[in-house]
Image (cartoon, rainbow over all chains, first blue to last red; front, side, top):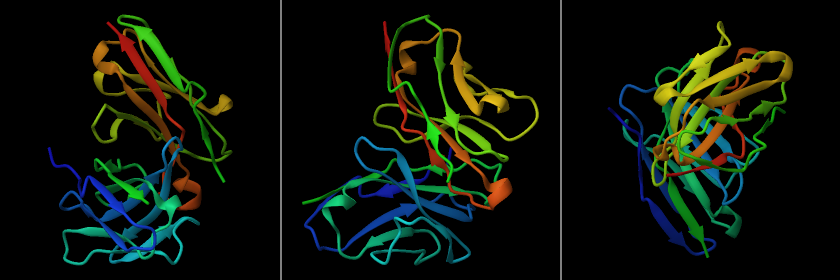
Length: 115
Length: 116
């Protein structure tokens, strides 16, 4: 069964550094998402992406964050200047067509630790 | 904004016991409802979902959930749990039918521990 994959599984970075989290959605999926879960807190929506542009974003997704689909297979989340509070598990998800009745398939997550 | 509450943070059961995990949401309009499960070391997987029709939905691995609109609830049930059901369970909602938003709003999760 096809799965969403994410790399790296763990990343440690220094505050102020840029990080790029990578996701390979399920092929033929067209809608992509990033969520995050700070330790002990709820999974929170960050952004959704369709047709090479952001379709929806939360208030968390400020100018420090950006997403792109650079090559037709990867979907990346960039944090330009990491802060301590960016430490979290970041989940990528993909969906076939964006239909509200379709399942979002999640990847295993990248655990980001900002020191 | 909508929110989702899961009041049971940690549940411990013996094998063969019955399970009911609570989920309540706060949104007065049309909702799509989901239960996801995360087994240790694995990614979030869909257990079941409700969009419309029969409010009792059946999912994988013997799980079911009942949508009670008047109570804003979508509780997850299983008549007899197994050790392999040990996992964290997340309830999620989207309000896209009204708002066009596809983002899922998650509850805080319930950690289920099944003792052999």
